[in-house]
Length: 283
Image 1 (spheres, rainbow, N blue to C red):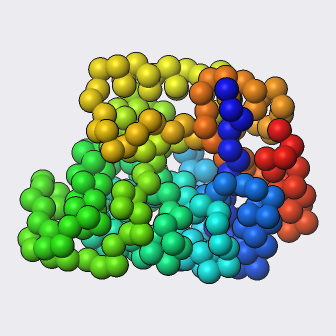
Image 2: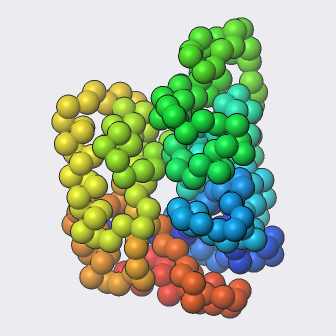
């Protein structure tokens, strides 16, 4: 049983929405041996805030592709994750171009995390119906992969159609690393069928173990393409990380722990102290 790698969540929002802070934290994570930094995404937030909205409307969320392109220029080895892009509310050809460009500029360091969304006011603002967003996400991903891997690509789906088009640059990765977020059995199936990894957000070791059991159950009844390899498991803990938790996550089969600074982290110095305290050498 190997120890999980460590990532950092939230590199593009709140305190880390400031360009200088974003840069300093990403560089500190890279120096400390973190394997990845991850964005969060909300294109718009309802005002006033109301459940299930996770953040106040004044919270800064820098666009994911812009933030990761910016960080690609000031880092060299750390992976750059989208945690997560709400795929149904994005135009797939435009998003495919943006993500391929990030992977190209970063030398193949992008991890594309995607989900189907849950915040109705945001989906409405993006002209996306809540109904059938899972089917829309699956089709968008398939269409994007055709643009990433094929010249003169054609795609004829229910939601997406194009014929004889080419998008360059292609991603630096021949098979762009893709991660599915979500805790439902349907999300588990999407991860097993279509992604290199699965991402569980705000999960303690007990709920993570339940999620992983669901993934294994789905995998036993679902065909997984060989090129995706073994499903990689990433978790953002629901509480401040402890050594006991790290051991429990590892025992459950977690490959990566993506830590998130809590509300008590209110300054740049707090963030840098958090990076230092949660780096891989501490576990």
